[in-house]
Amino acid sequence: MVPSSTTELMDTTEQTNANVDDDRLTLNNVIFAGSGHSKCVICREETRRGMISMPKSARLDLLIIHLMYAPNGVRCCSSHLLNNNRLLPDVEISMGNRQQLASSLSSSEMIDLVTDLLSLLHEAVTSPRLDFLDPSLNDEDYLTWTGWTKAQFDNMFDIISPYLRSSSNRNTRNALAMFWIKLKTNLSFRQIGSVFNIPGNSEDRRKRAADAFDSVRQCLIEKFVPRHLGVQHLTREDAKKQNTSFSIEFFGNNVTIIWDGTYLYMGKSSSHLINRKTYSGQKHRHLIKFMSLILPNGYILDTIGPFWGTMNDASIAKNITDTCDILMKWCEKGDTMIVDRGFRDVIESFIDMG
Image (spheres, rainbow, N blue to C red):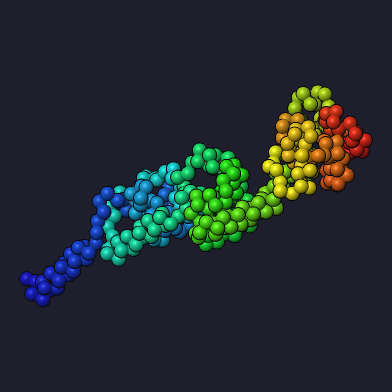
């Protein structure tokens, strides 16, 4: 026979457990992702290098997109995230070896979750109308606005992001997007500021968008362009690999460079001097010129300029050979320079190059 005091204690314990269960809210349509730290919450791989604590924004993405609740502190592979912040929209959730349990949240956890969701809604209201941190933007969106695919944009951003500074008015990824949108669409800085919902009045938006443009331009010139343009970015052996069977047949397997003058049209300037120097009598328009050095298969070795529109190809080539020491040292005897008859005045300079 059980003593009455023991019976009362058991009843009290059962009542306490029932009260605890009553305090928890069960979400039957939301799967509990688990709270362990030994596996990635997305792919269920064992903990390894490259795993991080899943940020709040990614956990909210997981809840909204996949109806899966992940508590604070779970870990995931950084490859599942965009900029270590948001969950990639096309990520696949591994359901193997995972118990599909309904999520049961305590009152404090529920309060935190609702607070986080309200914070996410507030961010959605105040965030840029066009946001390149948004993982749902696809290749078509990137091509439409910037002229680059998402992979190309990401590659460019990875190179220059350590040298760009974020601020309360913009983040570095959107700053890079502003730069290319300006070049591709020629929207005014006021319009770009409006598209990205930059804080402030119209003039503030214009100034901040212009500052972002200048910062990215300078960073690209210093950190990105030298990796992809200029004779210093390619070895002579790599340059020879750009030869075609046609060029090898006619000119041999040495370095072959095609010199091609090109130009960009520009608007009429308020400066009389600039108008005079940029006006091309041949094209009857204002323009600035560049000299492109191209390898036989179309690979652009370098683009040098700008030069005034009044200069012809020969004078531009003479200027380059006189001032570009790196190019002169890079070229060797036996290299081939392909030019048109407009370069006849600088033949001696090309002979000196080899």
